[in-house]
Amino acid sequence: MDKVSLKIKLYLENENDKFMGIGVLWLLQKVDATGSLRAAAAELGISYSKAFRMVENLEAALGVDVLERRKGGVNRSGASLTPFGQEFIVLYDDFQKTCKKLLEDPFDTFEKRLKTLVSASLEG
Image 1 (cartoon, one colour):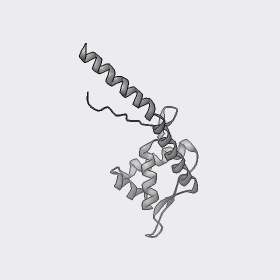
Image 2: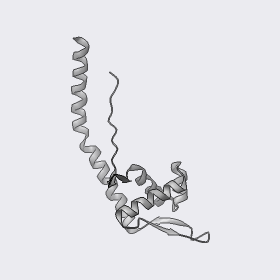
Image 3: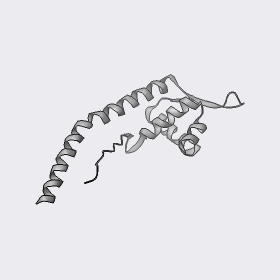
Image 4: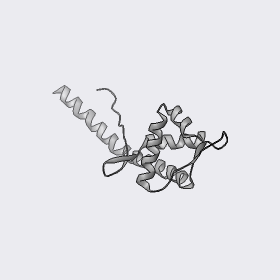
């Protein structure tokens, strides 16, 4: 049996619409680092329109702005996280890391039992 691994995807959803997951987290972290939604989207290899929709969807679901957008002239274009956005990405990142950590022990137990089951099946 090859090495088995666990892949966990966490999403927050609202009436079956996903509005927050690791992709949105990465996008917001890139906006924080680059100061631009367009640059963040480019670094992640997604279109600006998709990135814009991701942020729009998140803000609509939460009812709070996570980005402050600046329009006009060279110095005023770009985006930054609002104070709420800053705290939200830390909160969500901590949450998703905690959830994944909580699954490590049950997965280790599962993996050991699976190996035993596979070995017994191959022997018998």
